[in-house]
Image 1 (cartoon, rainbow, N blue to C red):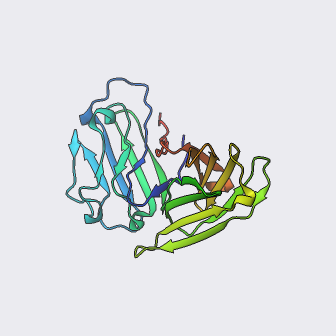
Image 2 (cartoon, one colour; image 1 turned 90 degrees about the vertical axis):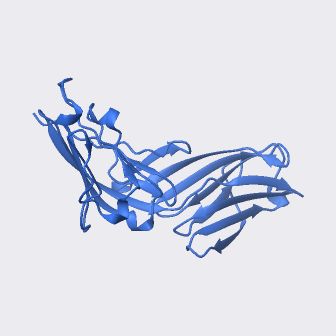
Image 3 (cartoon, one colour; image 1 turned 60 degrees about the vertical axis):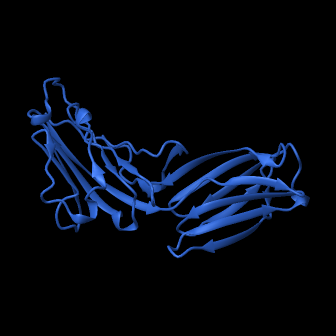
Length: 237
């Protein structure tokens, strides 16, 4: 079973690539479980776990000190790989292979990379402003009012030396009323962030959730605090 083979890693942040083997046996031990993570086109391995310990002699230098499994979880068939500080070069197709004394399986995972952040809101002199500090690829911005109608905003983009965009967008006073709730949508081809912002004063609380593009145009949704994909490996009988 696989619920998401197209995770989106946020550049500069950690990403968990989840991989599970479900067995009917509760007798598996760390020594009986082996795990290999590979990346298509890569010389060497991403990570290998064998005989109850990491086996990193063939690990590619790109992943040194940036990857780990969780030994306490491996014994239960959880081969999830933590990838630290995601880079654009990490994008690509990964294969997770896991086996124990009585079961095994593998799954292909295509990791995509982007930069995305939740916006912060301010209200001053009749102007509602939203600032999102990290977006790549360059996003589009849409404002809508309490009744769902599209509002005309003013959006500016600033690109840093790494190519990542800072996005500042404003609504003028003609479109803004105190105590009303406005929807701010910022999106590119990989990630969409939708925020609900209610004007209660100069500090404007905003509730943001993300959706990530997936195969067949389906969306896998997650709240801001949930950055973990869930993947599974089938049980072989």
